[in-house]
Image (cartoon, rainbow over all chains, first blue to last red; front, top):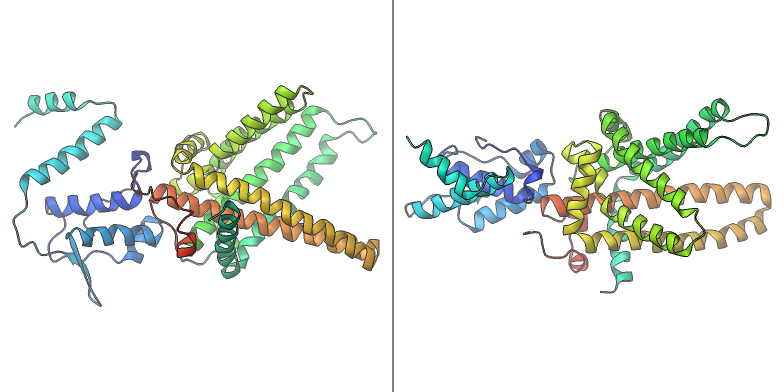
Length: 121
Length: 266
């Protein structure tokens, strides 16, 4: 599964939510192709040494939110997008995650913005 | 649902896991046997043989060694309980191997909890009621805040101190369930202890002192094994709920819905 999935217990975010975020980030960035199969619940649970219910909950919520589709007997795949990605929504999600990550290291949103301005390409 | 009903349901859920994987009950027994072995081994070396009272230091060394043994087997049991809750097959050998690989963390956790326990025991020797009350309050707060330290150490591969910190952080999210477990365990132990006292009286009366005492001793070991295992299973389930945000299979059912508070989205 081409998804960066390192569980960070220090984030204070439940593990199922971290899986959810990793999959949506991989889908948004293109790291997870539209025809690539996601690992089964048991495969991913075993790889991460976590409870299968945790992966099941992440997949259930990903499916409910329209990010993935489970095909009986074939596996779980990214959902076909019928409408274009809402760029504002995507930027907002990336911004929120970045601000949370920066705050964990004691960096404020203001410092982050100043840094982006400084290093702008 | 009353607290008593909740305790019964949680015990039943833990019991289902234990019945499916009875090998888990070996860990508390091995812990007890090893602790007795360590005490027998260190006793003659550290204790004077001429009838003098043993020094504080000797007692401390024996108590510290027994505490480390207890933490070691609790780590092994928790490792295998988490596996059982994942639907995998636990084994005594795998649990001991896993605990063997975490010796530095076990030593640091054991050193901190053992030292704190020793200080509390010393404070508890005071005859002043206010000191005794303070000791009881601090002891209860400490046992609740450190309740998930071993599952944290096992699952998140942390050292002793960081496991304790993380445990107190998780406790803030699951204080209701943790307190219920602590209270539940004490109620269950008291009830089974009462049954054991009645059983002991009946057995000694019926079978005489020799066989009766032997059977009572076997019943005490069985009680220690069952309660220790049930508690470790529930503690592991509580950790999964607090850290991963889900209720593990055997604890997920309509009769248990009211126990888990719906804050997995925190």
